[in-house]
Structures are given as structure tokens and as C-alpha cells.
Image (cartoon, rainbow, N blue to C red; front, side):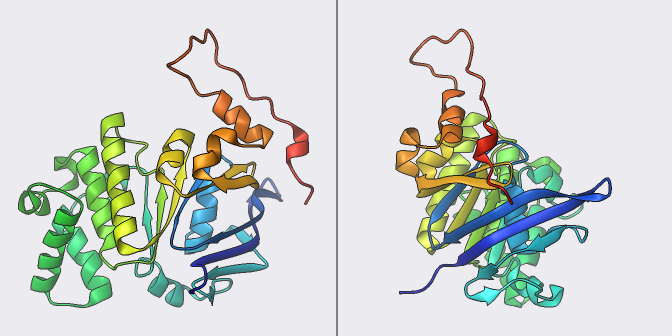
Amino acid sequence: MSGPLVEISNLRVDFPSHGEWRPAVRGLSLSLGREKLGIVGESGSGKSVTGRALMGLLPAKARVQADSLRFDGQDLLGLPERRFRKLRGARMGLILQDPKYSLNPVMTAGQQIAEAWATHKRGSRAEARDAAFSLLEQVKIRDPRRVYDAYPHEVSGGMGQRVMIAMMLAPEPDLLIADEPTSALDATVQTEILRLIDELVSARGMGLMLISHDLPLVSRFCDRVMVMYAGQVMEVLPAKDLAHARHAYTRGLLACLPRLDEGQHRLPVLNRDPAWLRPQ
């Protein structure tokens, strides 16, 4: 049986602010195999910082420390950028929040997918073009030839996110990190994109790290859920058991969600307990 794709032990990420170090992630540990892990929590809880630390995409001013930070058995701490680039994209893909800010506005969608494929597969221009058409079909774009020649501003938000997914899948990575991949989309398109990611991850046997604010969403699409607060992990539990979470913070987040099956004049306000944070 193969080992986990990701092994993180006691990860700490700090940023300089007004002459001192401010923690963004504090003592985080997790293990991720070829499964779907949802990471949830409020803004500023350290979700995205964790994903970027794993991919080596934090700014140079960030201070990253850990007892262990490994991808597929390879130690990532102190890994030279040249070697990180061989992992990033090729074996670890990142889908960002809004395609209109992530895609190159002066290249067509097809050119960007073909470039992503050629960078890692090193085939001919014709092979890269054929691969881009195939990837557009895989992400269920009905008219791949039209979209191939379209610029990012000429496609909808949902179509742009499908192009982003195709680009990330081009090198056939082992791990996909999706950072709020549907936050810029309407509810109907959100469901379509998440179902697409779920199908592709399952079909390819990949690991998925889905970063989100949406607890009901991750409970439907993930195998496990990790709940973060102020840079620390509050609890990790099976996604199917999220409604029966034991930690007060997770229960508080769930209680703040509006419900359609009962009237609520005011939504509850989350009361934070200083005891939730472990001393560092």
C-alpha cells in the first residue's frame, strides 16, 4: 500500500508586521492520501496559506517552519526553487478563485492549455493543440474549437473556470489544490464545476485539497473535513459526520448557517472562546 501524498507535521507560517512576526498558521499537522479533503474556516484562518506553503508559493518575506513538510515522500523544506518548479504544475496543481484574474488576457484559452501541456510533456505544437482540444472536452465544454480560439474576456465565469481546470489537469498531477474554485460563480454553475472536479479527481485517482468557506459544500463533495481557526486545526472528521461535529467552533459555524426549513428572525453570532487556541 502506497504512503500518503502529503505529510505535514507542526507547520508554522509567520509574516512580518510592524517589527514583529505575526502567525498565520500555527502548529498544523495533516496527512492526505488520494482522497478529497475539505479545509474550512473563516477568512484569515490559514486555509490558503497552508496550500501555498505546500506548493512553495508564499512570498519571500514569509517564514515557514515545520517538523516535516513532505509531498510523496520528498522533503519540501529548503527545496531549491528549480526543483520546486518540477513539482509545481507537473505533480501539484492549483485552481484559484477567479479565472478572470488568473488567465492571461492576451492569450487564447486554447493557447494557455496547450502551453501548460507542452511545458511538462514536451510534445510538438500539433500534439499540444490536440491535447488542449481533448482537455476541453474532458471538462465538458460543448464547443471546444470555439473556446480554444476565445480570449478569457470572451468566455463566461464558469467557462473560464473550466479552462483553468483543464490547464491544471494538463500535466496529469497527483494532487489538486482548489482554493475557493467556485466563489466567483453563481449557485447553479458552482454545482456543475464541483461535480466536474469530483468526477475528474475520482477518475484520475488524484488527491484533492478543497479550500472553502462553505461547510455544506465540503460535506457533500469531500471525504474528510479539516476545520481551521486562527491558524490552528480545531478538528478533523469524516465529511458525512460534519453535522454532528464535536468542537464548539465547528458547531458555531454550522449554527450560523441560514435554514430554509425553519424561521429565523436573526442568525446566531459565533462566540469565540480564547481557550480554543493552544499556547505556542
